[in-house]
Amino acid sequence: MSEPAKPAASAPRRRFLKEMAGAAGGACLLAMGVGLYSKQARALPAQAIRPPGALAEDAFLGACIRCGLCVRDCPYDTLRLATPGDGVVSGTPYFTARDIPCEMCEDIPCVKACPSGALDHGLTDIRQADMGIAVLIDQENCLNFLGMRCDVCYRVCPVIDKAITLEMRRNPREEREGPATTRHAMLIPTVHADTCTGCGKCEKSCILPEAAIKVLPAHIARGAPADHYRRGWEEKSKAGGSLIGDQVKLPVRGLDGQSAPGGQP
Amino acid sequence: MSAQHPGVEAIAAKGWLRAHKWLLLRRGSQLGILAAFLAGPLFGWWIVKGNLAASLTLDVLPLTDPFVFTQMLAARHWPEVSAITGVLIVLGFYLLVGGRVFCSWACPMNVVTDAASWLRRRLGLKGGRTPHDATRLWLLGAVLLAAAITGRLVWEWVNPVSMLMRGLVFGFGAAWVFVIGVFLYDLLLAGRGWCGHVCPMGAFYGLLGKVALLRVSAHRRSACNDCMDCFAVCPEPQVIRPALKAAGQTHPVILESACTNCGRCIDVCSQDVFRLGSRFNRSEQ
Image (tube, rainbow over all chains, first blue to last red):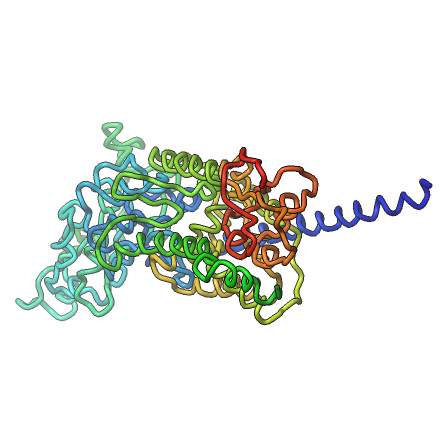
């Protein structure tokens, strides 16, 4: 009796195990594929800027639930939710500064609307926002670099004179072509990363057909100082004097009798 | 009746309207939810903002999808209070009415897979290979594990359900591809494959339905004439047999959590065998 019953009892079990293994294997493979896909497709294009208060990109992708409430509460239609094909992780909010920049609302409604905290509710002062950093990326076409007075990016900056300053610099054309009243000094728009919020007003307003100043995510825009570097002049002022004593001044060959290399005779 | 045209007898017996009552209510619910979300962007009437992942109704009522919420917790992120309030309200609601009520009454993908299933029935397509029922549970576990390992909501990279909802409310982009993919999968490869076998979101809501109060009961099962129409239209046909044919249980209430409470069986039954009621009402006629 027990002989024929054995295969009859184990066949359904074997089938069950096989089906289960198939289901489990398929599910794990699919999840693994999606996991790998998410790893390879998480890079944010340089022109896509996250809303104010967004957590660092890796943490953001673990926090944002893709609800779009920030998009809805943005009074200027700056934010949009990415769709597949945008190059931004589908369903996450971003803006393109050249299209519509962030207007830096005092009450930061997008952050308040975020239910997940992917936009950090600790951000209460919009001037502390870190959406990106403006970089004057094309110094060959920027009108101020050509010695003209455009200044538009500087003028529209909501943190004018802190995030962007105009730094006077000598116009090298004067040296090449001789002094002339039409060539005045260059006033170079200079971004200060610690105060720039990345709102993108400068990029939006750049009068060139393609903006010479662009907002980029910090990880693209910025270098990082090496931990072991010391800036001599800072150390000197901290110590109240040179740390290595007086330095010997050596003559520079070919410039004997002149005060400084490259200076006026 | 014929498996290609279930419900013909019911229409003859009860009239078209009564034979489509629950279907119409369900489509009304699905369209109503969508309309509420779209009234804002289309006409400026901001009844509901957001989408099914998280929303804010009339600027006071937060609702959060517990599945995406769980993914977020798995990715080790702790949310703001409004998301927690929202998820508790939604959990409470679906624990009461049945988890997979989300699938059949709210989820926009239901219209897509119902359409695929209808067309498959009409065309008499039989081929393909439907994965095991438990695939969705495994997938649910696997995507939560993947979220925990990577710290990202990995399923949301490809989740056709949230893509469809977002697409409808915020614009599609290439998200159509995923939706058409689900439609073709259900039409050609696996009948009722997506919602009933693969979707981890449905599996999640199914788990919520284990203790749901609202259930379908085959309370007049003695009147059943074995026309099989309920089996033909049911998105989870395996849940009917225990209740209707007293297979493995004695009472007529469908307690299987996979049942979506869609009520289509009530519609297509010419003998009025089924009704919607409390899980504790096990009476029979």
